Image 1 (cartoon, helix red, strand yellow):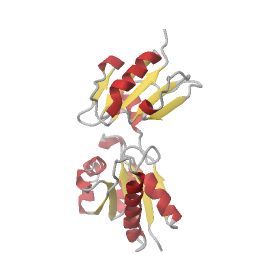
Image 2 (image 1 turned 45 degrees about the vertical axis):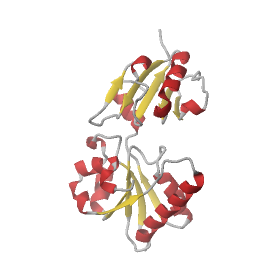
Image 3 (image 1 turned 60 degrees about the vertical axis):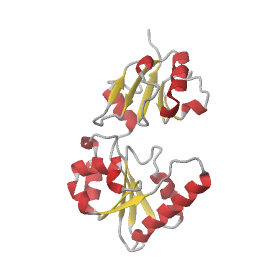
Image 4 (image 1 turned 90 degrees about the vertical axis):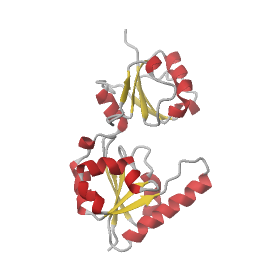
Length: 229
């Protein structure tokens, strides 16, 4: 019997946001994988360790997932990572790959999942609290009411989007172009809030577009709602 690969979300930062299922899977399985060169330095590991201290005695498997634009290099590393996980699965060992937030939202595990499934292995995803749901809760903002749509946009600076569709915009992965994004938001006329490092110890909350610093960190999430007079 081959093992099962679990993609397990541990939430956005606060260890109390971890689900009971995530905690159980970490406790019940010996092989814990995490993105990064050193497992114990990964944020996902540190979140899990605060709730499941016995994770320190597990077999920790770091999986290098480069954040570069070279698709050939990325594909090579993804194949290496998948083969690494397969080396455990082939021996009948389950692998629990822990990840920030939810494994279905812009998650590094998705790349491995496609390879593993193509190679005939079973993959199961375990949801976690998403960063944008956590940020909305921190801001005391409903993301959607009645029939409002939600637009989750990564790297909005690449789209030249006017942000003029009805509903709420959630902007992710644009911190490196924050000044440009802020200009887009100002032109949109929307009510803007943001959370940096949501639910982590160094969390910062911004209640307007002007409060958001141009050098906001990678884990910055913006919520832009239609202005209501």
